[in-house]
Image 1 (cartoon, rainbow, N blue to C red):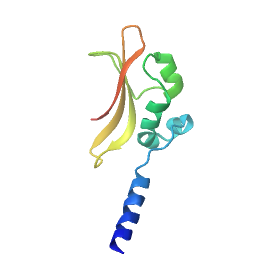
Image 2 (cartoon, rainbow, N blue to C red; image 1 turned 120 degrees about the vertical axis):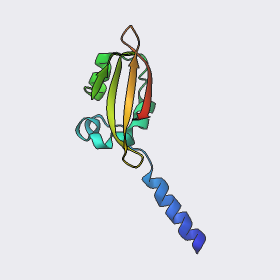
Image 3 (cartoon, rainbow, N blue to C red; image 1 turned 90 degrees about the vertical axis):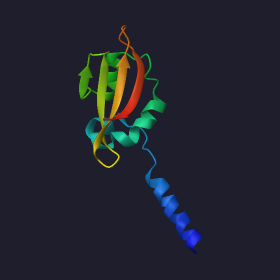
Length: 107
């Protein structure tokens, strides 16, 4: 009985941790849901090489544009961990204006 109860609880926990499929309308209108969609976004779209305009068309205007030490767009994904830090999607651009790398950070 204990094993079955533990298995059910584990299954419920794992179901609750699943990420949502990226949906552009939800990304634009419900920023608090971005954190659950970011992994789907990164799997669904090849962001490397995309231009600034392509990114803005896909994700909208970033929360922040950074120029130093390199050009970055920063998108707010929601609260991280215990709600102390912000979870961010950072898109790093090369000198030609295309994305050269991306990372999800807790700041």
